Length: 337
Image: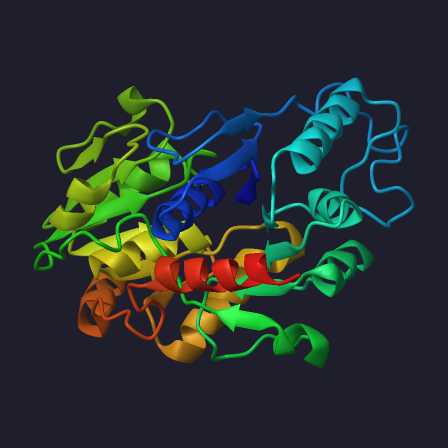
């Protein structure tokens, strides 16, 4: 059996794990602080929280810069790792997919369980990441082979680039919408103020603006602006859109690619410059229109026009069968002794 460790930040890790697990076509074990997603094909282990009541300096959370998160004397961490250890010991696990935790990767390998690490863009050459990538049986990179990351040869030799993969890859694309904008943000909340959204909508009165993301809806009232709040399934809104405005997170871009929509991409600050690395790759591939920060209102008419001209062709970013490719890689890795 293959097990998935799913990081709790945002929803992208969860969507990706479910998509790959479904492609495997066999029962899998899920482990996360998050609740099981509907339709998970197998057991799901809800893990105790390991982040509460932590002082990063007092608790030496990085264990002298060797790890990313291991606070001293933390009951939640201790119980969390014990539950994972019990599953690794008793659950018949042939392979653990880490998406993503250095500490869980190391724990699995110390149990003799091979590890498949789901890579993330950005600078991953810190000591902790090097440990996880070094011990991995295989590294799955959910982005295209080109441009190749500046990694050691030993990592590149065991990396499989499956391209972006989305829970929507198997849904039929619809023709691009008209003059409708979708602001698609993550579960962490909107990184733009209501005033900025109202100003952007006011500067483009011939466009309809839809906003999908957490936040207060009453502050986003404008004649051509509607805030839908958090939308678990944004596919209908993607279908209506002529242009999507989003961050440079892997899941958001995969969903834009699955829908085949033109995009304005605004990378957000993330550890290891993850989104900025992705944005740089988009620029080199001439995909979407990338801007460094939320633009001034006067720029929006030309940005939306540029995005429509560039179009929504994302085949070089996502082949549409990334989950099937990843599942094949995992089956092979799980069969190795």
